[in-house]
Length: 289
Ligand code: COA
Image (cartoon, rainbow, N blue to C red; front, top):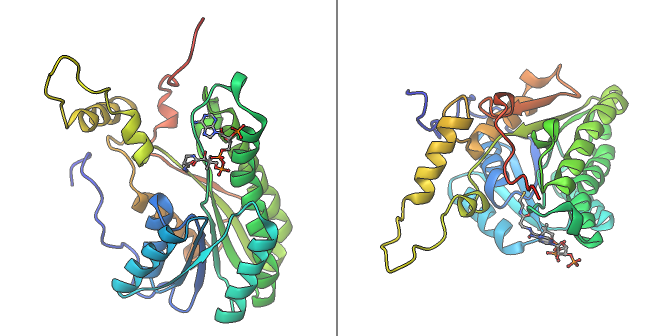
């Protein structure tokens, strides 16, 4: 395989690795969350996909079932602890256990800090940080009763160096890292392993939009491949591994941590980014007067 080719969608893990297990994936209907849900289901777990948007999670759960996996959907806002507790109790009552929680739900946008409204700040902090805490706290009694469990939270790398226009998200994800280490210590005696993954750049719809040049002026035919070319060039310049990440790259780390291979790993923040943050590329969109 060349350095730049995309990874295979075949699983590197053995069939049935997570058979009999139940996983709850917040934000599981789209993007990285969907990639995680698909792999956990492929490895035999029953996956509950939960998000604010019923359409996303129901469609995704159906596509997992169509592919031969076991999945169901729940609608919740991770900022609402009562609803989170209700969903967790329902899953435990119906399935008898929750082995894996993936705190993947997140909200984010680029915005200058000087004009960030209190509600904008609160929204991102509450979805990312409060949501991670509420969901983790809600599954704890279930995991304690069954003798343990795995919690994996999705963090980021941008707060390692700071990232302009991302004050809200970087603060929230730094909080998630702190929570990961603290809860790992508190909950280890009950067999609960608490880890985080810091993904590098994964080309979501928002990223593609950011790399798409404005419409061609003066009647010129627009270059439909412009975004792909710009992204390829970014990968060559800024990502030592030479390619963008995929949801499967992140899902593989979740599966590893959820499997017995992760038994002795807790309080760790696993960077899965093709070496991007170490490469010290200039942070984008720095504004100078
Ligand atoms: N720039 C500045 N402020 C923004 C913004 C942006 N691009 N996007 C949202 N906000 C502000 C809103 O104006 C609002 O503040 P206000 O009430 O003072 O006007 C506040 O953030 C909450 O936004 P809203 O969309 O009403 O709240 P929400 O809680 O339903 O959703 C987000 C919050 C972050 C999820 C939502 O803005 C969003 O959909 N973002 C893009 C999608 C996304 O985040 N996907 C996940 C990628 S990790």
